[in-house]
Image 1 (cartoon, rainbow, N blue to C red):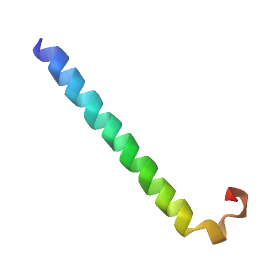
Image 2 (cartoon, rainbow, N blue to C red; image 1 turned 60 degrees about the vertical axis):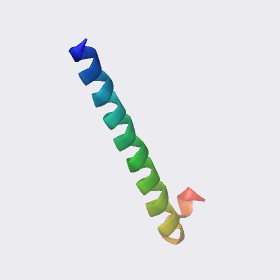
Image 3 (spheres, rainbow, N blue to C red; image 1 turned 135 degrees about the vertical axis):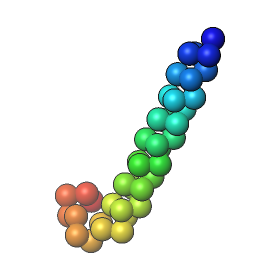
Image 4 (tube, one colour; image 1 turned 90 degrees about the vertical axis):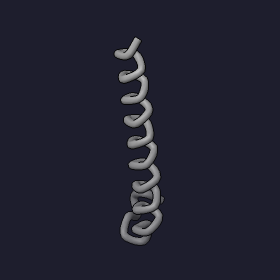
Length: 40
């Protein structure tokens, strides 16, 4: 049972990291839209 809890917590942290990275990427792309014509 403890292994399942550890795996569950790890996957939640992993998912949160991915979401945070995606949000940061979105903000960076928004900030640099002027420099990224391909993004439009």
